[in-house]
Amino acid sequence: MKGFSGARRAKQWLEGTMRIFGAYANTDSESCGRRLTLAWPYGGRTFSFDLGGAMRGDPYQNDMFCAEVKNYAQPSDQGTQFDEFLAKCYVAAQAQHHLSDHFMWITWAPFRANSWSTLNSPDQVESAVLQHSSRVLGTSNPEEARKLLDSELAQSVAARLWLIVLSDKQETLLPLKDWAAIVAAELTRREGSW
Image (cartoon, rainbow, N blue to C red; front, side, top):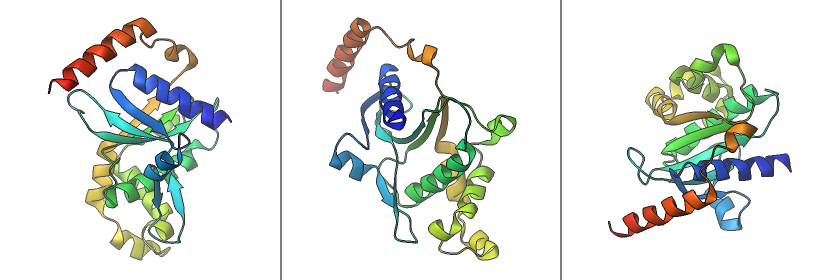
């Protein structure tokens, strides 16, 4: 239940920035779940992102995103889960999934503090893909996997990554509902006139 609550809270916060619109969770409906679900290239299994939606305003106008949400109080096993997330992002980018303009990792507990600044590096993406090479590249042989790895794609995925850390207090800094309604009405009016 905490994961469901975290996805709702992250969605609310993202929408509260007024830079995200049309956000949805994989649990909102069957069709939302389908939009956020992809197949691993090998092994016959699927995976799903927690959130997806569209962005507004330059430089992200009409870009699409998908997100993984971790509503944790402690780092826990986020490092392991993050590596799997990076492999999923690589798969989504490779498939040219319609939500793969941006990949967001949203958490309430920072992890891997000593390597935080490199978590969104191409090397980190490559390492994650190689860790999950049997599902992503169809081989568990390290040399063969290294040859199959697309370094340019890993670089592209790294450039699309967002690491977002929320806190309970930070969530209270959203615009007041009255203000948000005024801004939303103005944005709707402007978008309608384009």
